[in-house]
Length: 289
Length: 251
View 1 (cartoon, rainbow over the protein chains, first blue to last red):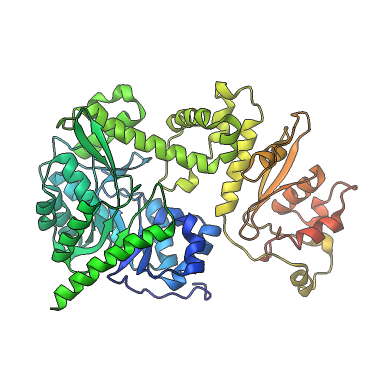
View 2 (cartoon, rainbow over the protein chains, first blue to last red):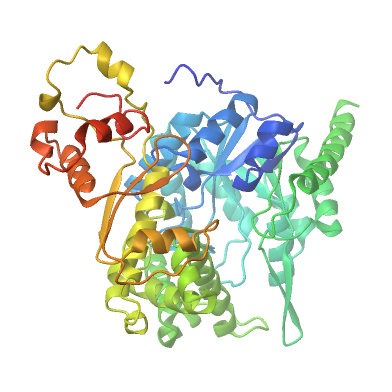
């Protein structure tokens, strides 16, 4: 490794972090905001060189890092794309992130990339495929990953395993951890009419290694509400309440403020991170008591 | 065939050909919202996000044709050339080829070359980094015969030619460009796109300089690359040793 790029495999602290966006690179380097960590989309750092790497290397020297993939397509029946796994490994080797995560969904079919996270039918067959794919990724990277629960706008006739049980079984069989996206739980609970609290109760809390929080977009289909997970708005109160409940089960865990569209000034995201930090401190006191 | 693979192929079909969405619709629940509407959400996500990725790579093309036209063209492009890798840094390389047979832009014969130039820009932006070769380093190597030297170009270097003045078209229509009147008869372009440090540079070269650097990039010695007696070789090399054209790693 390049000796001007000294970093340690420091774990991510149980604090709030923010998704790193190119438009905030300079603010981060100049202002050095007080945050627990930054998270990036692994796919944005798959080029050989250039400015994105210069910025991330500089920021990585000062902050723990989490790498969040959107292209491995853990749910693909066709298996894991070896080239994309190699690109992911190169990025992970380069930055030595404290956490690596991916989604319980598919985005690749016969090599075509949909650039979206599509939900899966929750069946025994899917469970076997997802478990194999996670194992392949973990073997390839030489480390465990976190598996994120999806948001979804459709469900399948074939699905017969409840999503939290599916997550738990995939984690149990592959040895991976869970990235609990509380906004996704809220969005899918509204879209599919399930109880978000019961969902959180069914997720194995001891496997949750990170939490994601984000805002969403509300749409209406002839009187029926459908929530769209666009990461384009502030986190709503109902999601903060669910977060508080989730923390009562998991204890303090690294928590990411995710924003991928309508990106505001970094200060706005810092406010949401400060809010998450207050919840984390509260639950840490409860744990200590 | 695996049930999961079958359902994923049905889904793929529904995204790229709405007329073939029945197989996917049969797999999913209604639950108060039509299956076609549910599939449309995913179709929109795929096309909107990929269109944004293409707009990031081809901002000058977008400016030249207008946002609405660009979005419609991107949709046709995505159907013709869907991404075959989850690394979208690789996506868009077929845009120029696509435009050459895309009838609605046949009146803009220079447009495919603008797309080539923007693609070269993106490739240069993400290319490997390298220490530039300076005159001092070259002198330290104690090289005797200049003509026998082989230079390695910076790994970001990309060459673009066009029968049209696309270099000036690109400059005038880039984010900080100044509008200017450009005639398509203003002659061909010989362009070196290169990123010695953080900034991508689009260098408009003379035909002789272009041929010279292209030959060097192909592995020729300076003597082999030097073919035009009117070309100011000494000056071109002196400039190249200050502006990061060459990589420090020896050829």
